[in-house]
Image 1: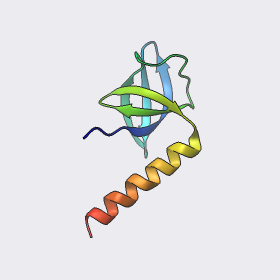
Image 2 (image 1 turned 90 degrees about the vertical axis):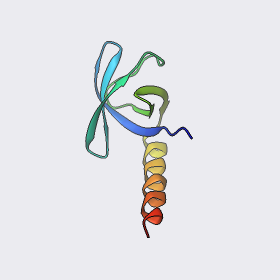
Image 3 (image 1 turned 180 degrees about the horizontal axis):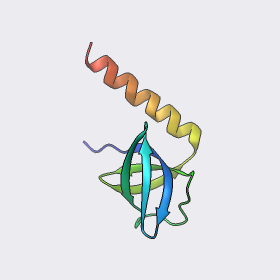
Image 4 (image 1 turned 135 degrees about the vertical axis):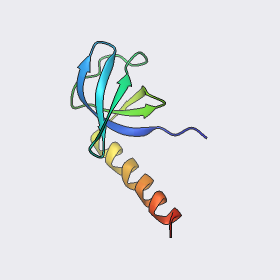
Length: 74
């Protein structure tokens, strides 16, 4: 199963970006997307930004992923 996680772009350096997912920083490749800027939200899969999304969609997706994770351990 493949899973992409919403991440917020902090900085962009050429073809890579520093992103954050719930206050944890990661490096993301931007080779598959154009015009990514700090403040954008992206879907991150296996280290690659695969889609730009809006802040509302990012928040809702993270909420649902947290809900699934919390229910899995009960």
